[in-house]
Length: 44
Image (cartoon, rainbow, N blue to C red):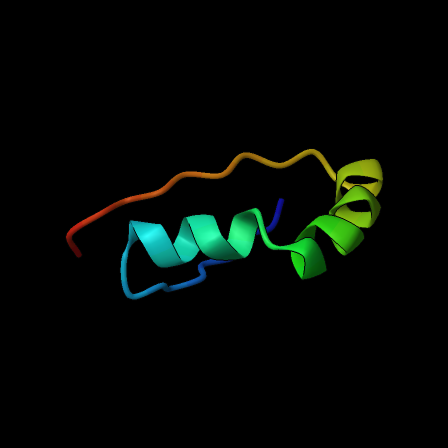
């Protein structure tokens, strides 16, 4: 098991990254090679 934490300025920036064409292009590589869960915690 591995834990990765990525910090964004706000939820809107996270959503912009998550839905960006650049990330969408490589996301299938991650999705095929690992089981993942994403949790967004706002306000830390």
